[in-house]
Length: 515
Image: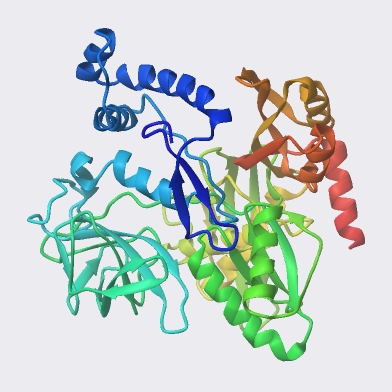
């Protein structure tokens, strides 16, 4: 620790045992040199400390901490602490630093939200004398009832009270209210502004929901989570574990908004989806090790999507008239592609009553069903705009079902010979020894990757930033270790969906057809 010039040693058999002592002689000169650099850096963040530094006066530990905290809050400096979460070493010093240097609730500016009843902006100081409002930011499954973690922004939350959920428009009753100390629970009667509390037994609130009073409702900006980009089939080794596996996966889904699970209606196969290969690997290990369920998993699959190559006008005629009760629906739809449309935007432009009002939503429902069902490969479509501009109906044979069928047919006609396969593109950041940069970039290029930036960091480390298709990145950690002799690291996150090159798209579809 360069602030107090002490060394810390953790016991190998119990990481909770931390011993403070003098810095070893062989490291003392280096520590003194680094401390001088640190003092100079933090002094620039605080005028009074800078003045003492320029005058050559001794700067105390408290003054260093004061300047370090100001620099951290101003985003001018970042304290670095060493430790290992895997071995539980260094945890105490990191937690102390969080208290010392990171912002407390008193340092946070007034928070803005929206009144869900009026859509007007609401601004409140983060104090306990304001009306209550808190944000649900985490859920943990527990045998005694799910734990919901809430950050209290304003006011007070009391055990036994009911609070309003602006998303569901329903009340949530607060059963047991607790303050968490790692896995230890401390029952409390009231939580105040700035507190993080845990509640047992909340029914409908999910991550991102805001709870408030009905008299002063507010909704704060919810967390946004990227779409899943990879999936794999999963099944229990023992048929008797199927229900248990479903229950465990259900808990994991509630805990992690970036983890999804669906059951294929045709095959009964359960498919889990997540942010990447490692994400799903961790979930599978939790199922096997924490819940003792033997599982078999399939090969990871990329979550491809499709869209239309270009705009197309179609006339969908769903007509079955052969005596008795018939079916009649004609829908004329103009389809186009819009980048900022996540799934489907349905527009009603019908004039003159050519399609009765009660049938118009059915066309949209039919188009939506066709889009979800996917095209030739079963991949869902996205970025679709469908404008219903005309149609025909029959006084006797038209029905909601007939126009829904016309909607399905309309999209199939639009997608015929007009479909484009999209793949998830990942933003990747790689750090490696400078002398291995060429090998890393060459390998990335061979994976259809695009290097956007390369910088050299202190210590002979190269940082490479770019984009690469997820389909090319399976087992990349093994390759990177080999290229860099174990000294390379990388992170990936979803960036966008982009068209797959035609030759590769054809191969993907052929492989899918082969099963």
